[in-house]
Image (cartoon, rainbow, N blue to C red; front, top):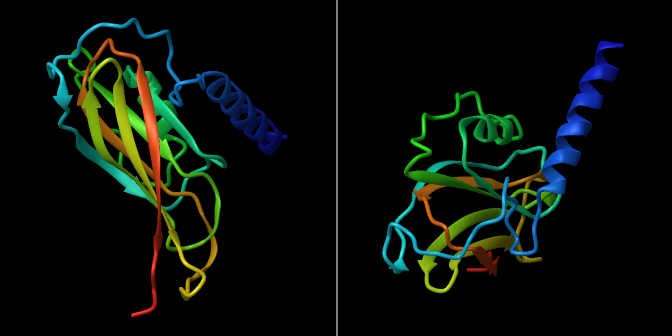
Length: 168
């Protein structure tokens, strides 16, 4: 019975988070209003919080996290023994990028660049192994969380797929 309640709870969390996904490619707890960022335009600095190869997120998804409870919820979806860091959400947001479930090792996801203009554009690299690669068997679900200055700009993203060439 306990397992059924746990499964139900996980299902409810997944449905709620899935419902937050918006057309820009980022889920948000509210609708962003066009405006300016603290960075003043151009390149935006960011700091990696954590990255890994195992999460419970099954499909390619991005999240914008604007509060400690939201961070705790997303943190529960990643495979880490660490506790969520303390973030000053009055000054910073957190972006979580998930590659979704992949069939083998050697898949990765990472934020390459963040730029402010009319929108805040997040460029995300999706790395996959070429067919020539010898990879470990077993599903992976890569993710990365980064901290960056708060903005009122609408978030957009661009995925940049890269294939690793294993032939030397």
